[in-house]
Length: 226
Image (tube, rainbow, N blue to C red):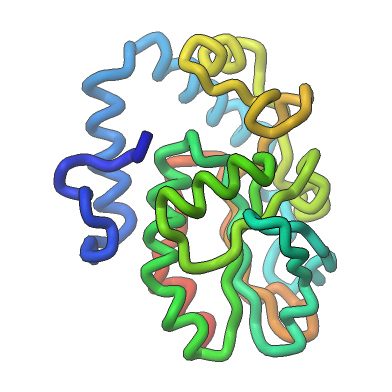
């Protein structure tokens, strides 16, 4: 399904800040998702924060690992894009996550500006090529969606965790079949991470967050490119 409220039915004209779009989605979750289910998701985020996963991820000043991954259409895309200019990389969980969808649609809205600034934009997720294709096509994304099998690249950025058993049970009940969606039985996901990488591989901007309902605003990203 498309994770949009009625007010968001035309994502191409929705110029609201990402935090406002997310606020609407949080209201729908609070209204329609059972409290015990919400509690499990909240406990998972709290546990990841206690583990300081985001603090251990690659930060500003670190050197980003190189990569070469297939995109949603099977075309190989690599960090050699840095030869052309700065690179914006978004690590997301998958097409089943309403906040990933919201971020991707918002980033798609600035894709042309990113290109005009001489930079490249792409997203990376552990979902299979078929799932990535569905997401790219359904939400009309204007940039490549790369397939990071087994979270190999996300792991190098320090973003990977294993979904706890209680949350796995909820995902199974709500048809979020991660072994099918991601093509492996690891039940591993990346926490959301957004990076701006300079041409020499140095990370200029880093935003990793254990809370999947919080992502940087597109304007924050553009500020790093101008």
